[in-house]
Image (cartoon, rainbow, N blue to C red; front, side):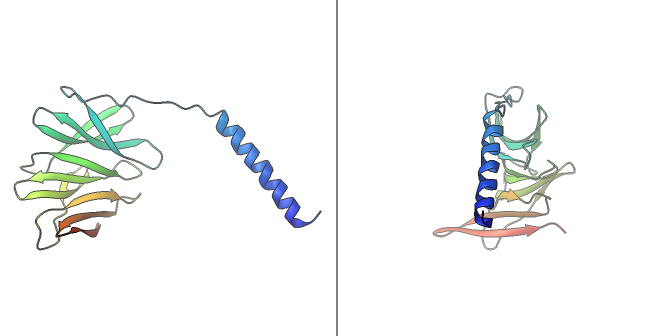
Length: 159
C-alpha cells in the first residue's frame, strides 16, 4: 500500500463521517418576530455564529434598523434628524451594526454601537453613502456611494 492509497482511504472515511453527522444534524427555523406595531421584519445580515441578526422593520414613521439577539429585537434608531434606517452588517459579537440612515443631508452610512449611531460621512463631492458590511471584530466597515454610471467603494477604519 502506498501513501496515496492511505490518504484516499482516510479522506473517504472522513467524508463518510461528515455525511453521517450532517444527515443527523437538526435543522430549525426560528421566527425572529416583528416589532410592536410593525407588520414585517427583513433581515440582511447575520453574525459569524448566527447569534446576532440585523436588518430593518416597518414602523408607522418608516423603516428602522434592528438588531436581534437571543429572541429580543432592538430598534437601533436613525442618525439625528433621520427619516429611516436599514442595517446591512453586524460584527461577530453583535456590538457593531452598520448600514444606511436617511438624513436631511441625504442617505448616510452609519456605524452603531451601544453608545449610539455615528455618521461615517461621504466621499466628496457626493452627499450620500451606505455601509454594506463590517469585519468580525467591528473595526473595518466597507460600503459605497453613488457616482455617475455606478458606485465608488470605500473602506472605513475605527480609530
